[in-house]
Length: 134
Image (cartoon, rainbow, N blue to C red; front, side):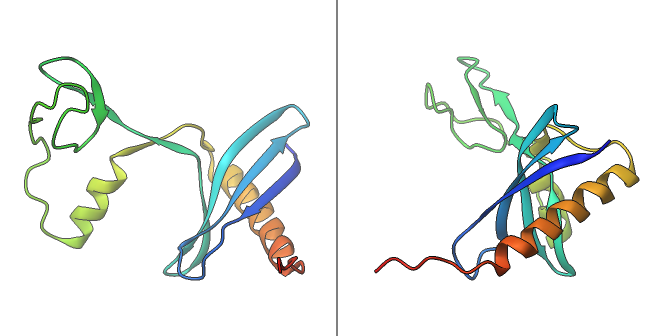
């Protein structure tokens, strides 16, 4: 596998943990969009594209985001499924379970290749002079 192109789209704002989005092309044949470059506690890392999980309303069967309190279709109060989340670690795990990866590497080696290429491209893009609008 060869990553043949990486495009970086920087995010504005100094206080955001989300620094950029990336699009990679693999073997000039396959594209993965919406890879995120995030500033974590121990530095930058790459997060693969994901989507919010949905759950059906028991009354009207409309799909609502997991952990919604009310149905967006009929307004019915939705059952609370997660129980009490008390510790910061448990809250983090609960937030993580709200999302599911759309695409992700299977092996550690593949993840390292993607992360290395994306972070290298991010540093190059970040170092470019920015046009200022007056």
